[in-house]
Image (cartoon, rainbow, N blue to C red; front, side, top):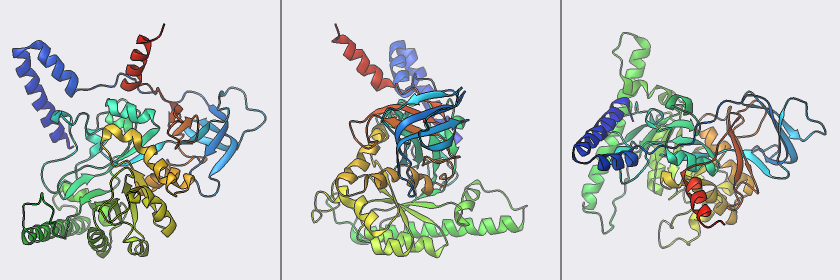
Length: 451
């Protein structure tokens, strides 16, 4: 994800293509189209004149006024200027979108995703999800995201307009970035390049599954070693920050500088967990160091609900479309988890928990939670305002309020209904072209059977 990493990958790809060119121009062309997948849909230009969306059922993603019947939104300079009930007269000189009873909501925000960091699982050269080494907080996903990715267009067509991108690999995987899904370059799509760091918290209990080759003692030893390395790294980072603050002549360290906002509590630390014991040890470790943990995972959240609430911990639920964690759980346990977290008062965002190619299924994950007890507007907040709050961008995005970015979707039915579909969408007031490779392929084969 660093510039060096990306240069290495591109350089390696070019070497492969050069070798194939010598052998077969057609083979090189085929590999090039696979590795460098490009979305031919051009990014939308900035908003040129005011827009009024009228006669819509508005889902604001706020607590005070969650739904406005027959509402309107006035958009100027990329921001929401007015939101309320549609007036009898609209000022002249404004483009009008008559929603005619359709639903308007904030654009969805994907969480804990690698969208834009990988194009094709089978093509290594398109995979920038991980960095070499165990500790690289200086790695920034926003620098490695491909703004021409076909997957961005597919997700955008499903209403996903923002994404909290988290890298993988190592113990400290890198920084987390927030992007918007419209722009020509990485600079255009970046909302905030650094909103926290990502820690892959180690398991502390030994696994006895059939695929585990290490003995329980070896596993516990390995877990203890990993935990000790994380402790040393954070201790060193804190010592460097204190030294650098006291003496500006201390040699610069990019890794530790990237930790500064997390160590002083301004940014959260996103911690991946997968069991109750991981949850407890991760939260206690972070709290002892004065950090703000945000947990990424699903398993163990419900059993640790009281613990999480008492420590004020927020979570990202990694999808509802998954199997139960154990045979003892009911098959519907993953579907009902968000609703149960809502009842016990734990703030949560819902992620798709799927490959980036299927990020379009994010609203369907939230809809499944609604079918199993979660309030529809609470489900909508879990993929709009709550992830924006976790990422520290809620002052700009995540709800329909005066002064915030006009990053909105207009759907034919309730935004979480699978059959609704996105009719129109805007990012910062710019209306999006929702076509993508899949819509063009559908049109191609629809035409084959037309008269």
